[in-house]
Length: 196
Image 1 (tube, rainbow, N blue to C red):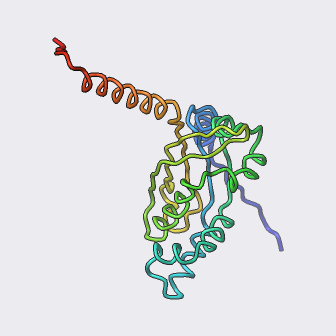
Image 2: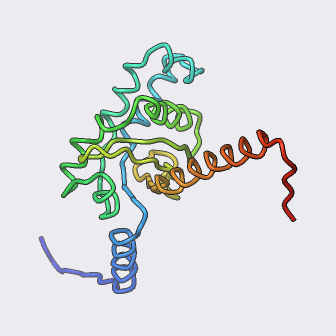
């Protein structure tokens, strides 16, 4: 027989406030951020380890379709506005549809290196790469992956950041060309040139 009822309440005002602040910073940051769930990837990598795979670098190189199988297991939880702008899309669904087909061939190795790092138990990864956005513009980025504290065992929350370095790369290339031109002019002179 039901003889009583007890209720417990807890003040979550501070936690809600902290979550709202984090969400505001996440959504409005000038850097592209994605939240991803890699737990199904972790299960898959663990199963491969049980099957005796030890050298994941060699395994993924010899079995590139396994990389696609891992990518299919990644769940994108959230993306911020900077990520949408960078990819020239309007919403998360459009971003997800483009994700698997917008990397350039030279940067497909990012996925490969990222999976090797995670398989080796690393919780951080960084690389440079590029992709082509919805408007057809090539975007050079610094790609960073961080497993959130407390999620190291299951990889259920991973924060990916993209920093657009397109303009700085363009400027570095232009400066390099200008330096080469200047050096060639100076080297070809038959008269004395001195800079003081």
